Image (cartoon, rainbow, N blue to C red; front, side, top):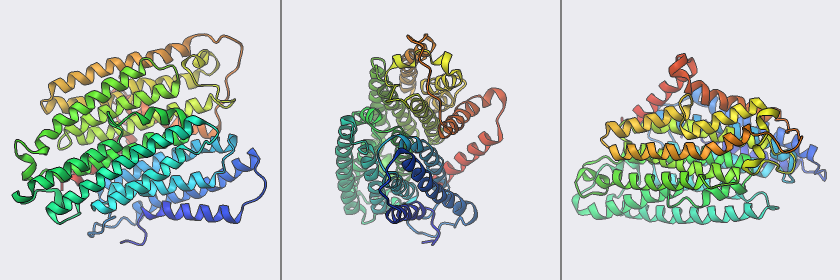
Length: 492
């Protein structure tokens, strides 16, 4: 293993942060001290992420057979985690300045989770993948429960824990069946087995895919997700919506590309039935997620149910994982991640005074008091709804186009129907922003870190979304090349 393997750097940064916190503890626990400590320790975390980027840019090793070697697909996954992690760190500064929690433990947990996520997206060894997913998931559960003053935080963490344990048990059982059938624990062993081992192989692969689907919160394994959006701090919710969600879908894509062997081509095999099963799960997620979003009053819970619907679209992309769906999935992860991050940053900037922005009615008067933030929030919501001019629309279009080219016409119609439901759900907060406020209350100002996050997410959502009209920018072109190389490396 390369000594400068980028996967190790976030974990090293987490250990350093815990050591610095242990040496620098004092009795001063005021909001100012917590904010300053958050900035100092956050800088260490940023340096860890920068170390990952510099290692990949200047010391990228060629694959040598190691379990953590970085190929083109892993490079995309690590890059996504680095960018999303930087945005999460920026949002966390607001929390540490206004809450009672110390910054060291949450930032260290984030870094450990990112290290696990990076290992998961690059490894081709199933045991290493299992350990990496545990390292990525368990710190996330602890982060969800970090606001001990709120019952909803502990409740959502408990639900996420039970969902995690269920997925881990199923994954471990799948590993056992696959090892018994093939005698191997690498993804290359999924490329077909001897006929005598067909039953054990199919059972193992079924359990493996089911565990990953459950971790991705695809319906019917979704009930814990809206609770997390409602109970967790904004930066933790952003971590769940970006890094945690993207990691599982990237792993699913790698697994589905690793198992196209002759056994799966048989008419009655699990592989032959998998597209139909994924379409059924996606249909349930699309209808339940967008349907429940229509009746929500709380803003965070509304976004949580919209995310369940977004997961349905990402699952549809997996139906054509061997074709156009792979690139469409990567675009979808970028689009949904940027939109949800921007929404969470906006809600956080409106909630500086005793969590003032909780319900849809709390958005009233936003267009008058803060027109720029209102415009950005509208863009993020429109992206989640799949409106033209946003990255969410382009990603959704690519997914539906791949389904149409693959011959899944009724799945295409399902996606169009779900888009109508999504537009109906986002209509209520959009109309609420345009209504005048009941009183003369002035809105809270966005902090500098929140302004930075809004600027980045707005540039991604609108810059990429308008590229077909205004012309492709250098950044959009580079990301497109990056995605094409990532997909190409899966097919080698």
